[in-house]
Image (tube, rainbow, N blue to C red; front, top):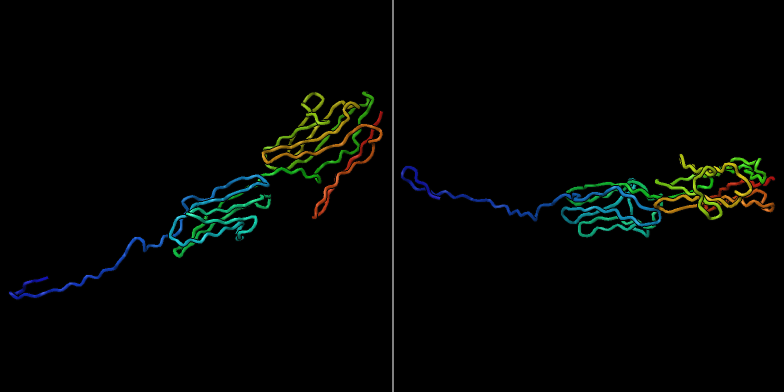
Length: 248
């Protein structure tokens, strides 16, 4: 560059500093383009928790349940492929219910998102059964009485209950009243007599499956006595007991 001052000519030299910079040199912090969602699954089945992650590679993904890190094993499989981070859980049981967190990290920063997994199941705990307490069926109609069968049911709503006698479903009527309130399934048989003898059982159903519980009530002289149901596993055992007697 030239300039003229007072008739004299001088030369100015400018030095430009150049800093090479491209978009590819930027490091982007991870972010979730799709976060975890709360989900429900059925006991004994399979669940997949998934979220989508964007950001500069390399990205490290780690999974946690209730703040405890999950490692890949026979039950859990942690996968991160083409921006999809997933956790696969097989053979679901009630202990798998809880809050899960996915943490994505690179040298620019760390982000996390969480979701809840709820396991649905159905369980009939025998230890909650109420004893029948010497329920008696009379052959003499004049001695007829109200007979009640009850069992406690826990599980994921909605639960439907059904009652059967000798394999045949019992329909509600003036003689048979069925209720299911506050987890207690109840069958009332009014004006019972010897014709009502049989094997009764309650069946509970929800979308996770069904369970049934039998009440033995064959009314024959040889069947009189005490009945006991014992359930045991490696942790311990429980039992429920009742007495059957016949009069008439």
